Image 1 (tube, rainbow, N blue to C red):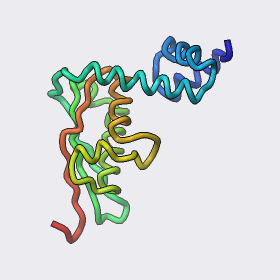
Image 2 (cartoon, rainbow, N blue to C red):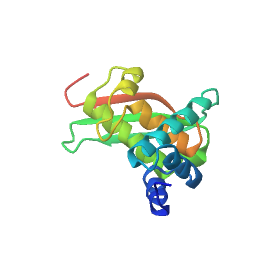
Image 3 (cartoon, one colour):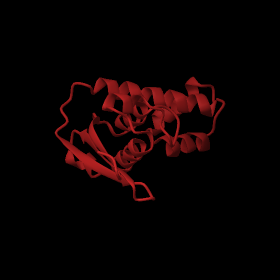
Length: 152
């Protein structure tokens, strides 16, 4: 065993994955924390793919106004239950997607999902699917609108 209980705890706090998943990730990666993070991330994406056929009737509209007050965005992200729509982590992820729209000005949802996330690693699609896998519900970035002063 090349890891400790403290390593399991640290990986769990960082990723939000369950204790047994963290233990297995560290076992699979021979105690390499970076490989364990990647294992957890990949597993989260796999869990998200399994939920692809579920209905999303609830959701949250997040907004972000840049600090100069000249650019703003609203993003609608759908989920399965109102419980998740009220979840702070879900709402924070939605706000970060709105910030991405302000910063990178994508032309479509598809383009947005393919963009590299400005505040972290991976793409926006991976950000959304990662939290989807962690929480256990299907998420859909449904639509967004971006406003900039002086532009139509």
